[in-house]
Length: 235
Image (cartoon, rainbow, N blue to C red; front, side, top):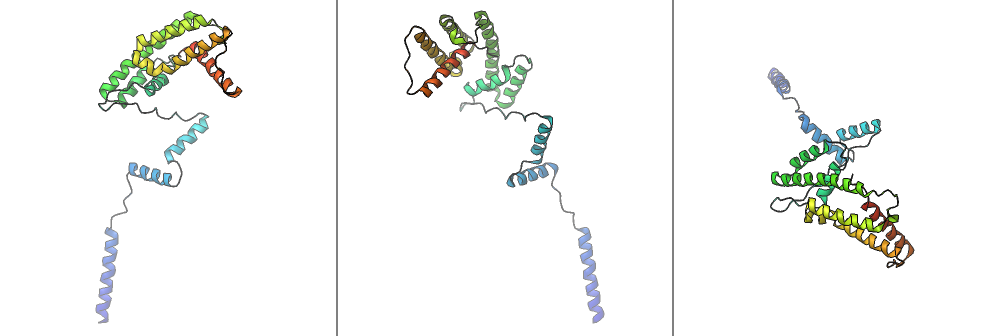
């Protein structure tokens, strides 16, 4: 009887050993799964993912800033047609205002093709082409005005007014009335208002004053900025 119990116990030990030997090794997540798991764990713990943290350390070591955040999403109508709103204007400025880099236009085209449906991208590229041409013509015409004073408000207001009208017509002609209004409508309104106010002051007619001195000072500064912007290069 004792021999039978001993044999039974020995058999159980052998079976357990075999089962442990044949058991599959614990599965490690694939590389992508491991990255996602570590990123999620880091986010739960309030820490940046490892890759982001390493990138930030690299930027600090190089003494530079991290890249700017992605551009805002462009607007599309329900039928996927492009809406040429101010977000599109801001995006194009971020690519095209630095015209010393000839590759920026191609970079903008590539970005539009990546982020927009085909038809909307084609329309956006057409607008970008017209806008790039407008920027060149704008600065050429502005240079011909020969505004040399650093204080634009001290210049001939009639010349400034003539240039404002010429610039507005240029925008409508090269970009279309809808885009010119959407992108530059507020700027044109402020420019006309500033010109009117400075003309009134020059003739001794004080424009309506603000409720207090602080508000008046801010208003005057805003109007002066509008005049300065009127004579500023597009790039």
